[in-house]
Image (cartoon, rainbow, N blue to C red; front, side, top):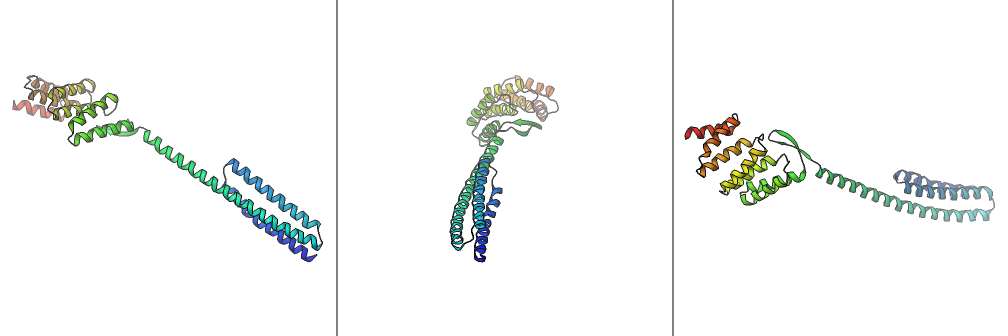
Length: 251
């Protein structure tokens, strides 16, 4: 009887030893389906443990004890299989959660790239879409590189595509400069007149007027003098007006 009790106690302790890690695994899962699977496995193991304990409590002869030992070994094998299933399930869920986290992180990054950015243009804070920023920067890069023809085309496309952009007045002004750099004074004057018409309050307006006067001078157009006078009158405190005064004084 003493031998039986030790064997039965060993079986119960082994079952409990395996059972405890299963409980620890439960904290790994947040997914409802995974939690249900774990609960089912736990219930199955608990039922097997209870059945074994009941058999230990009701059987007392030697042959029954040996039978219980065999059953206990089978139980341990079954528990080992269940633990393996739980490990696989835990790994699958962990991988799924990581993929979901990576997906949402990537999605958030993509959305942020599409959000308007706050920039300061000529002293004023404005919201600019990433597409506008890229288009303007690309056009200005061409201008700075000295590719005035490509810059003119890019700036022309920009003002047509983003007429309400905070960069529109600047783009139109530099479009005029791109034409002037190609010695196309008529196109330069036309582009700068758009600045004066559509963006009269822009800080670039005085410079646009001065550029018009420069082109008129090169074209030997007598209107250059009046343009300089109008510049001084309309934008008296601008650096362009100071330059206009110097030019008039030299005439």
